[in-house]
Image (tube, rainbow, N blue to C red):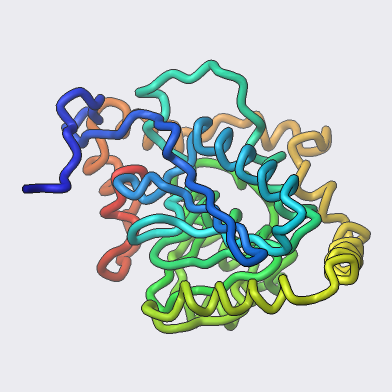
Length: 295
């Protein structure tokens, strides 16, 4: 008797790693006691983000928004990670169905009328780090690892939220070095609110959500809007929409030979060779995104 999935029909990376196809179960939703729980549910690829996941996450937010009994939302990941970020193997399953832009979904969480708590265990890297960052509150397991590692791939920043969470020096450390950061360092930098033992993460998130759900909802909504307004007046909306800034056009369109070369390695040789090329000069702790088939 085994719970292992049948991967015989799955498409594979060039080095033979099976990648699960999109599924209607890629995001799970449940609601009880005034709290909606949204679970990213692609654990075999560390909840890597593709168009289908964004489509289902947006639909889950619709449900939470429409349910007057829901007063707080918990966002978490199934399995051993919150999210390993954008799915580098999404092209194995072409998806032309209508889907919201990922930036729009993350900024919907930022402005969502009900407070959203990210409960992070394992890796929250790349877009996964940003997804946790746009939530109102973030609780991390002590085994959590956060980081904006996409610079190692040669990619730009999907959602420019980190400079509004950390100090200038810390934001540059996160975004320029692309290192994976421990939960305690993430707490010190302001990327998370609290760090708890791994076996207490779900309980801590539920307790915090319960407190929020017990408060007068109109005042919670107002206070969230007031805090957001301060950061928006500091330029947050223009910052996250930086791709619309004509003064950045040359930088955005510049060809990067190093990044392009790394992507060719990934496409032609597969994940293991790409990791070796990407992570020259980096020595991550055990359990790092180097063992994530999607990152």
